[in-house]
Image (tube, rainbow, N blue to C red; front, side, top):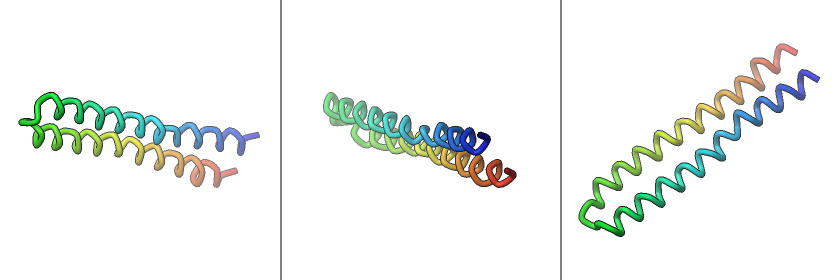
Length: 78
């Protein structure tokens, strides 16, 4: 029973990657819209988009780290 709960907890922590993918897609979508409306600000929008995607990606990495900790640290004690 406990092993199943650990697997469910790790799967929930891994779902962060799904939400990160959605967030990065929306960031790129909004950046493309902004560049299409005003091509003069392409450099500033691109830099901000890269920063936003990097911050979103760190959330996915933290989710993966938490899922590994759940599996190997908590799961190893059973």
